[in-house]
Amino acid sequence: MKLLVAFLATPGGEDAVALGVCLARTLNASLDISLVIPPDRPEAFASTGSYAGVLDDAAKEWLAGAEALVPDDVTVATHVAFDENSADGILKEVDRLNSTLLVVGASGGGLIGRHSLGSVVNDLLHSSSIPVALAPRGFSHTGSTRVRAITAAIGRRPGAEILLDTALELSAQGDLPLRLLSLVSRDDMPPRRSPQDEEKATAHAVELAQRALDTAQQRLPESTPLSSAIAEGRSVEDAVATVDWHDGDVIMVGSSRLAAPRKLFLGSTAAKMLRVLAVPMIVVPRQAPQ
Image 1 (spheres, helix red, strand yellow):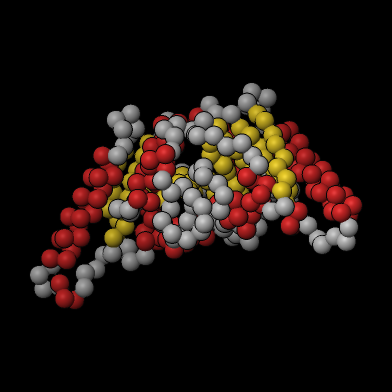
Image 2 (cartoon, helix red, strand yellow):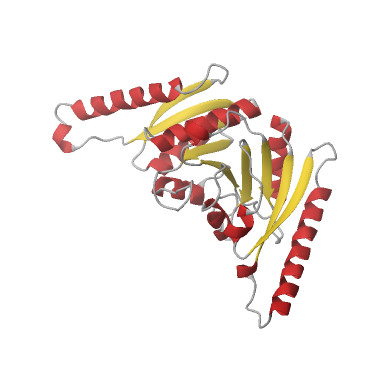
């Protein structure tokens, strides 16, 4: 397994490196760190070439700083890539390095909570063909050094196979327990006229969620340390806040049904979860039609 950190010389970049180290150590994987810089220099510097030289030197210095954050027990290599578009440059690095998982950090602004999606991360979440791991803000200071357990958020609709397969692969690779989680949000239900109608709708949603969990459990090997949970709440945020989370936990989610085959698209439920979660999230691409 090969992990690629999309690095910027920012606190978010340091968070991404810390999560990359955590995942690499747990999964016995190698770690690449890539920094994308523009290929052309402004016309004002064209005659002297000083801009390109300064930028190249700065990129090497930034990457040296990133490499210094990686402990000796993790194999790491650093790379400078050139592209006008940072997201495109990272995706080309994914192909060139044959990466199996991409790690990105929070931008430091945006969504309320520990996660925030900058423009580059948002672009990657709409176009990556491999899973993307999102590091919460401050992970470099407060995050765990190793993954403790994986939680896979299983929806009530069909199509969770690729998410389960990826969660199983990571669980086996890191010898990690796996928890299947289904969320029931009353806000997502049709309007009801009475508390009794709402109670029936909630019970039906719980039944559907349990059925999805039972189906998922049937696909998992008996040797997998497995648990399951259903979380209820007025909203997705309320439901996910009722779940017990610990240092070293990682949550995995599937892509929206609107995502192109084998591409990522962060769905509305996952985006709501990011508002309250302080643990890393791994988004898995949608499976291509058979």
